[in-house]
Image (cartoon, rainbow, N blue to C red; front, side, top):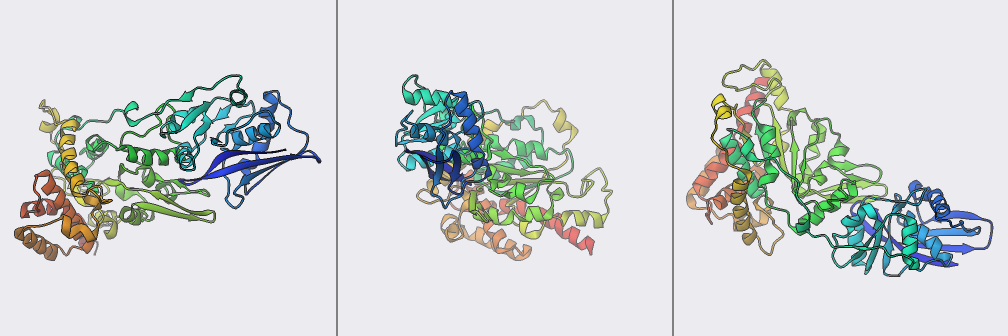
Length: 513
């Protein structure tokens, strides 16, 4: 007796179809699973036997061979349990699974169907392969229902699916879930931050163009508060961006069953003790790291100088390529990581280097060594260097209402709309993503702007990368001012956010000598 049931496998973000083939034949009783299955898949034999017994079905006393095709691709995890369970019943003649249906889910010993990771990318792949119906764990049903033109059934336990296919009872299909049907979680508001007017404007500029920013200032100046409020001024996620982000969180197992779509740009803030694998991703079957979990959102690195230097250097290539490539013996996985990098740090170990009222107790050499934990190439990848000055008593005690995130966001969205029109028909999404070959076309300058940029380039000894990034920031400043052409004043505004490396790092390197 032969039967075949469709399922899906997953390797990174790449889902692939799996045919669960079963053959029941005469011979000594045995239950074998072949098809390059890992230990978790092999262990499904005992779970399935117990679940069959719980449903009142005796496991067939025959030679039972299960093949997971294609046999040359490794199968990981417990997502094939339910498909194998139903394939056995199909081979026994109990049920008939439609050819245009796919089944995924883990089966527990008592027959309950437990959730699995990566349901969204698997459902999207199933739709591309012509699958019309998905049977998934009940806890994953809303996640799968995000995919249009797909009938999704949430399966609470194996017996319910058995009765549904036998026609005794009917599972109810899950309604399609769109972006507008998911409530967005609350985000801290910029109105809570008193003072720091200059830093707020700089972060508004960063949000308007999608630029990376580094905040430097003494402890308690509000660097973390400012960074945590950034998602509230960024443009809303598009549906395509939401699906991309949700897929990564699905693979990582971070989705809420009741809120299956990521509707707010991610804000990831890993601790400075994070490992290289935790930041970039890794493992035997590589999981996404913090860089990828922040895709289409913000990665905030607080206390930047406290991170391991080798861990920080991993950021350099992903910030340029917008993807992380992880190679293992089983294959190569690419995770997207189109992020805004926001970092914060003190200027020295005690935090008071350059403070107007409190003296630094570190000494010049200690301060220089602390700053030099950040390499020049990494520092070069920050478009804006923002100084967070100490907050005064008058600022903190002021009853004057601060500008809200909603008001700032209006200006950011207006600047992004200008960019969307400019980049229509290209893959560029914001000013920070302008490619070198398009820089001249999208960043026209007046003669005075060119003269000022030339003077700055020669005086400051900028690298080619710093030149490009400075020009992109000036493009954003011009957009916020409603100017089609970059003028000298926009170059000047961009330059003022490239001076802190000269103030701190050059001083530090001189002192260290």
